[in-house]
Image (cartoon, rainbow, N blue to C red; front, side):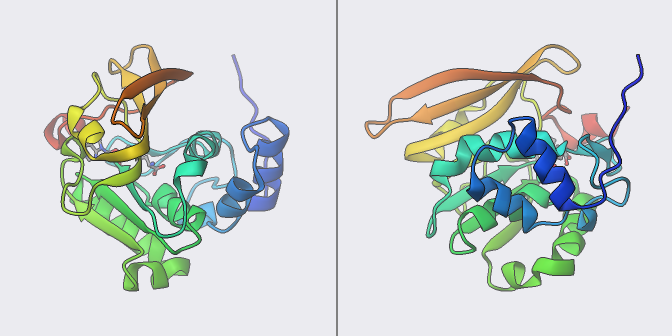
Amino acid sequence: MMFFYPPYNSMKELCDHLKKDGYLKSQKVYDSLMNVDRKDFSKNSPYEDRPQPINYNVTISAPHMHAYCLELLKDHLKPGGKALDVGFGSGYLTVAMSKMMDDKGTAVGIEHIKELCDFANENIRKNHKNLLDSKKVILVHGDGRNGCTQYGPYNCIHVGAAAAKLPQALIDQLTNGGRLVIPIGEEGGTQYIYIIDKDNNGKITKTQGLCVSYVPLTSAEHQLSY
Ligand code: SAH
């Protein structure tokens, strides 16, 4: 089967299309994506609604997945809050999460490939250098399966790679009232987004979301071994 990706030329065209398709539901998420130009993060066809390779066997996620996850996290991304983005890759979503908090929160990203940490840092510097300088966006090199205790706990956590099973460390690093959005499923198999909520008494509930296809949340060694 052939898929046709319309040749959008701008973030406006892309976001209007995501809105029409129902992925962008709120003005808040629309504005946040509009504030972060995907061309700073992907050299190839940045305004197409599909993932693009960023080397090291991974991709920048499709814009509709960024929109979908931000809509799920919207009420947990508030000024003064703290958010964690596990497997930040290009750095796109970490910045978008900061924008959702009106640049008045702390968006921490953790990524296990050193070269991608440098790549994201360069991408963000193009138009959002202030966020790095003011530490509103903090990029950490490390294994995100353990979360990032140094800056936690977090009001919300986003995971950009599929875990074979739910990492307990990430649940532990959520505040009460916090939310984790994570793809879960076997590598190359059926995966679903799960929405994990921790209520004000610390009780956990899990809700299944979209069926997806993400690269695995794994060791750096395994990721680079293909
Ligand atoms: N949200 C990112 C997604 C990048 S793809 C974006 O849109 O750009 C998933 C990323 O997760 C890759 O960069 C990969 O290197 C990273 N990753 C995979 N396993 C990881 C782990 N154990 N710890 C940290 N990062 C990991």
